[in-house]
Image (cartoon, rainbow over the protein chains, first blue to last red):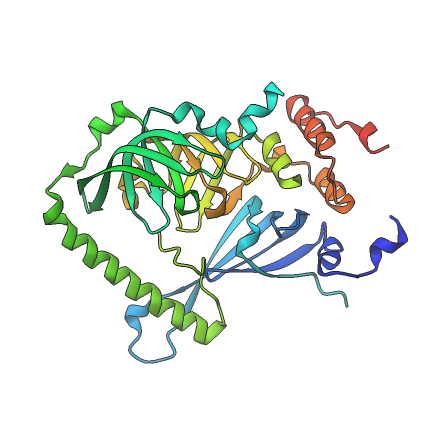
Amino acid sequence: MDPSSSSIQEPFDLIRLSLSERVYIKLRGDREVTGVLHAYDGHMNLILSDVEETILIVDPDSATEAPVPVNVAKRKMDMLFVRGDGVILVSPPSRA
Amino acid sequence: MDSLIPFTTSGALVDCVDRKMLVILRDGRKLHGVLRSYDQFANLVLEDTYERIYHGNTFAQDWRGLYVIRGENVVLLGEIDLDVEDDVPLKEVDYQTLEPYCKLEAEKRKQRDDAKAQILFDQNGCSKEGGEGDGY
Amino acid sequence: MLIFSVFKTLTDQQVTVELKNDLSITGTLKSVDQFLNIRLDNIKVSDEARHPHMIAVKNCFIRGSVVRYVQLPADHVDTQLLEDATRRGDNSTKAIVLTLTIKNRNAETLKFHYG
């Protein structure tokens, strides 16, 4: 790989370095996904494999006293396209 | 160049023209009508349009006429299978009768969603999807 | 353009499109355009009871902007190819389309594109 590609000059460079690694994505609408990143574009559209989605569920009807318990539902998918307009953040794997 | 036709907006819509279609809008409205025209933004012309509302196993429709629909408000454009349409296990009722039920249901759903969004925002800092009223 | 190309290579495959209104539609991908509008044929809506208006719909056009996810058939996506194309910041999508299309048709990778 060319040496300049490992330097970080703009936000997308950080995403590029996460290719083929497991990333955490926070999405609009109370959702999160983790998956192995294979492709992205300038809209932050993403293609991930081995995906686990976490959905936060609350039942406001039980909202008599705060805090209302927040439940999570999880779901697995093999290969997923995520539309960029729903992405809040992409978190690269931690490099210890 | 011929091979690229399926990969344009027109390529996807051309065979829907002059057919009975269902259009779902971003505010959740469902319109039935005959698609007469479209463009690259998926702006649509719908003729002889009826708005349909659903509640339980009933539906009702109200005549709306000719619509030009701005593309950004379109969620989905579905081709109605006329054979299946006759067998749909739903009962048509009077629009005026059904409308209050649907309004009440929509109102309840909105309250629930608002309450839910507020709880999640307070506890987790989650932001709502859509932003500009994607309540469809 | 890269993602557009990926979708083009997946035409005639089964995909599941999940919309931001939680409607989930499985069908055969018939067409896609530059806005990632999607045309699906022979559709099946999950939880049809909650969406009675969809019963009589067989084919549909979904506006790209309302899509949340598309579940893709994993065995028709060459992840290595995608990563390489993404790293290159690929604008010459022809190579990808050609390569992926041929790969999907006869399960052979064309190495000469990458040298």
